Length: 255
Ligand SMILES: NC(=O)c1ccc[n+]([C@@H]2O[C@H](COP(=O)([O-])OP(=O)(O)OC[C@H]3O[C@@H](n4cnc5c(N)ncnc54)[C@H](OP(=O)(O)O)[C@@H]3O)[C@@H](O)[C@H]2O)c1
Image 1 (cartoon, helix red, strand yellow):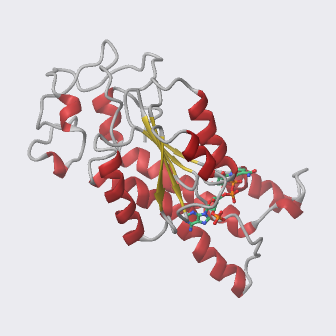
Image 2 (tube, rainbow, N blue to C red):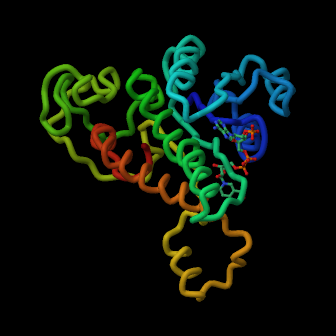
């Protein structure tokens, strides 16, 4: 049973993801939170109206704006006091297809980095620091042990804020902080950052060398750079938040 949050789900892939979750059993996804840039008048409106108890809208005009994200998270706290188990960072500024190294392209780069790379990191960190990014509330998979409360998987003791993981998810005592993945659905909060092959440095290299069969005309340099930055953000978030992987016994998946 998971609560999901999708950023900018009022159209496109974000809205398709809302519909996909709605098509799953209500027992599995009882609450689907969706941000949108405006309060209504879009394709999400009839979906919310038809599923009022299950789909809730949160207004977030700019995913790269610190105050707006804080306000959205504070609203979320009232809608979902137990937090979010699956975060899908879908919102993105996809155009215009500006070129580097023009000045207009460089200014556009700032916008796209803010929305496409900074935005996802901001949503993760705001939820995380508010203790609202949590593993699903079901029992941990068999075979996974938990460190004692107030001791981090790295052996740090003291207030959990200092090393930040889900205190109440980790009540059971353990002697072993490392676990082998078993192939079960990970009992960790899941963060999905929507990437693009345009952010692939390998593909960029092939275009550089003229060895790619891909049409250069569909390649948006600024967007590609912002999605490459998102790769870095995702990797570093995963690494930094590995404390939760160890708590929940996972090295893959999760955030
Ligand atoms: N479509 C593809 O082929 C494709 C391929 C690979 C990856 N992706 C990724 O998949 C995701 C969704 O793509 P899509 O095709 O559905 O894109 P889309 O139709 O352009 O939708 C993007 C959504 O993000 C919103 N948005 C733009 N700037 C924002 C900001 N500053 N703050 C908050 N929301 C903002 C847009 O709002 P507005 O409605 O106001 O514009 C829109 O609702 C993106 O992350 C994209 O990079 C897409």
